[in-house]
Image (cartoon, rainbow, N blue to C red; front, top):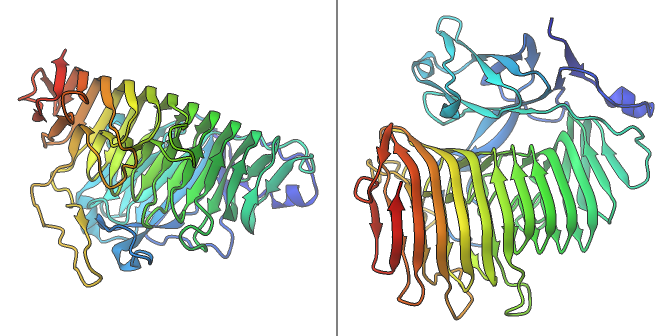
Amino acid sequence: MKRITLLILAIIAAFGLNASVNAETIIPTIPDSEAVNRDYEVWIDGVKAPVWQCRVSAIPFNRVWPGYQRDKNQTELAGYVVWETDLPTSEIVVKTTRDADALQSVVVRPQSLGIRPKIDAKKKEIAFTIPGATPTVLELGGFRQCLHLLPFPVYKRPDNLNAPNLRYFGPGVHREGLIEVKSGDEIFVDAGAVVYGGVRGQNVENVKISGPGVIDASPYERGEIGGIFRFSNCKNITIDGIVQRDPDVWSTTLLNCDDVAIRNAKLVGLWRYNADGIDVCNSERVLVENSFLRTFDDGLVVKGLDQGVVGVQKPCKDITFRGNVVWCDWGRALELGAETRAPEFRNIRFENIDVIRTTHIAMDVQHGDRAKIRDVSFDNIRVEFDDKIPTPVYQNSDDQIYDPDADPNYCPNLAVIVIASGMWSHDDINGDVDGVLFKDIVVYGNRKPFSSFAGLDSEHKATNVVFDNLQINGEKIMSAQDANLSQNEFVEGVSFQ
């Protein structure tokens, strides 16, 4: 018999009791003031779970910041469910209020999981099993108004809620605004907690933020709160868990940081301009793993940025993204750049990642500044392309109407390497790229996407690029022609294995 605990920790917190939880599955309640999504009813291992609501992008329609926020008519409301589990699988049953026609096309992503849901059209119910704490997305009749299923591992609650340097947020709504952390601080955001604000750390170390609760920046205008997490010149930072919802700009930003671990993060409700996911900038020894990101701009990104003094920026080194699921509603899913202001980018790893949707490029090295980029790998990356993909369009005026069929045959690029100065470049010299590995890359769908590599000139080349086991729609690709790969004269040493 599977044991389910409906989480009501408010009583525990109120009496200062030990809040450790011994349960296989924990389903939080939603605070009364929080919006619920009425498109779905969800049961997890036989117990009904509340469906939270978030705002997401409905169309890939974007513009350079015009001085005011994106029109909400370009967005829609979607649902998500969170819970904690230490079981090897979770049995999911979903009942929808959507039109029965939506049940004609039911997809559970990532497709690499091979989930084939059972559909009862009469009851409008879908049933399937997901492994462990694996994030998945249920789409009915396409990606619009989907359901995000976002399990966490079971967290150990703090033993002493009154411990020095601990900020504990229990179930309910907390309007905190900007939270400035000090060295040695710990924050725990419990299930059923919603914290409105963002967390900042500058010149601090040994900080831990964890828990399955929500931090939400929706009340704040662009730049007012600066995203959900922003750490500058920090060391030994851990972010484990947290639903990051509706940031005003980039959701998580690391600037000049060392020894950072981010795991089990859940990024949903990103719809505003420049709502990047996780940006690692001029930092070393960073790990981002087992997380879910749905972004309205680039997803997992490594950047080199100006830090006040030209030519003294830290390198970007020893950075690993692994075991993540990425949905990019605009931009690049996995990216280096476009800003590459650093002495070097070295030992950058993207491993075991599902890109379930992207609009422009799945894997991108966009080199606009001076860094020497070395030893980059995209390993075991699975990319999904539908038969019909909405065309990304730049909006040029307020009265422009989005045309979803601007290019009926549109397909994002699979892999791009480009060395060129662009609108985000600040350096007056350019760098080069040497040593990029694309290993065990699998493309799902009936499309054969294009890729392109381009150096700048004879002194700024892209060299030694290897495709090792590229598979597109079940076909192993062994040549540039079969890969739909274009390259200019400043690219050398591209090989297929």
